[in-house]
Image (tube, rainbow, N blue to C red; front, top):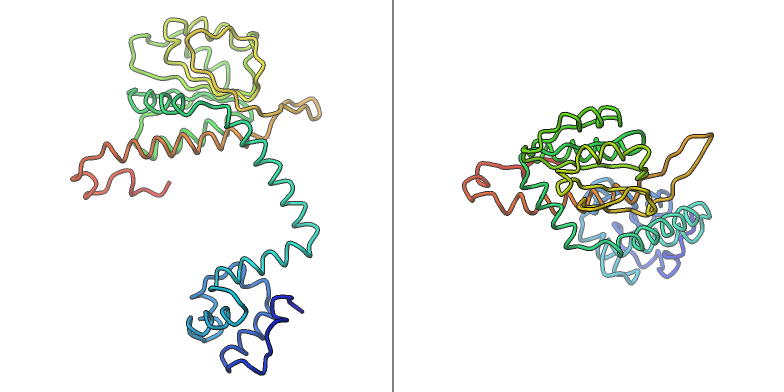
Length: 269
């Protein structure tokens, strides 16, 4: 492959190791994109110093700058990569517009509630169930007591028997905030409404909100073959932000002795 970034160098001016790199890049140009400096040097039986000197002869400061330039060259010549980049840029732009409207102190207050409560009930149904399951699994990994409620009918049955004196938080992941679906549920929870955290995809809703903590993630609901769904990208991103805040809070609460013995921060999350 005739790489533009190799056109500025004369192969005759290269050492034996550098010519090996030059030939390898021409024959395996995509391999460098997924290889570390050490891994690539082992593959070619050369030293890392030789690779760095080669990069510098091309005008780069080091290996990472070479990889970045090579990636840019591939993106400029492949229409499919350009299209993927456009899609990702658009999704990230929409997500940033959404999160710019979310109050950071509100997220901290949610984390405080989740960390303080003795138990957290997490609800989700249909596509929102994926978000609920993910958050439930991470909170369990961090040693928080969480109970997953799958489906609206189970949630409604739960609210009829909910112990109002229990030190608990109820976290709802939904696509809609419809009075038809959730009116009776919130009526059952009215005495515990300050402990209800609602993360909803749509901005417009028919639920009269009083004391509930309510966040909408500005995700567009789509009807496809009479099925209502959305892609939940913003919801999962919000979950990641909450997890990071909770993890930091959890780690800061560990005593030095607990940290030495290995606490939740040692787990692979």
